[in-house]
Image (cartoon, rainbow, N blue to C red):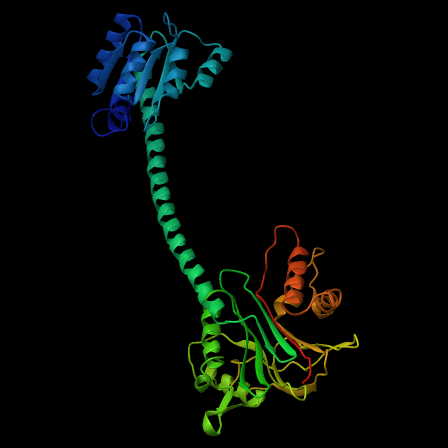
Length: 423
């Protein structure tokens, strides 16, 4: 294809990227020669005899392409180019300097000022049309890029709006999830329960709670649903309904007795009931680990069931400590639940801690997991100066402070602490 064919296919008034051309030259004859050729090729042509007049035209009618002489009285073509680049503009203006200069250092000056191309005077019409065609391709690419950037910007704005709405919903969801644990400390005579719940995101899959039908009988639990986020949080809301601390008639861990009194079912039976309910719900892939316990605060006897959850920790009043339980299987994996059922006895001054694996699997500054022994050391270092909720909060603060810089929680953290005071 000839140069003439290439130019006619792209620039001009036929919808190409270059429609308006500004010719800037102090020589009226040179302007007339260039303007005549440009008009014949189908361009709208503007003329200016100096840089100042050219800037006025650019401010009112932005050109797509500028042909400017380098050497002009007053404002040179180089100075005009710099001033043109400083003007606010919606699109890109292609700038060609007309010059008799050919030294590399002078060409570098022109490029540094913002020029896109150069033409040596006297201008050859065929070369001019070829340079205009090259400029048209660049302008078209720039405009296409601008269009795509606008699409990206609009899409990003929509995504940000959606994210803001989701974030607002998650904030509200966190408030709802926090309401599942209505009280973080509760005393029964000389004994006290303290609870901690710290999701790694807006919402999480951990749950702790307790309920009491009276007569110093208390049921309490620590649950960790598989995964994180919305799905796990929905599961915790469901489990909180199964183990309600306010609606005993809906609590599957309780059974009705005479005269509207309630009693606590054996922990193993509760675990089997929860497993059966999950297995009957098709389409649910989540499972959870749990330690559920019932405590007789008169005698100090505690019956427990462990279903894949970390081993409960007993801190004796004499300074000794032990992890109890054999593990068991998580709830919701298989129709027939294999859980660990056992009992222990607390004496005045003893503490019993149930906790999620977010504690023991937390990374320390050296990159290692805390492990149960590390958790025990953290707690021992704070006894007897910290008790109850202060102890749990202090351990949480120490644990998060020991993480590598810039690293947040990888998992939810939750715990329930029973400080047994006897009758």
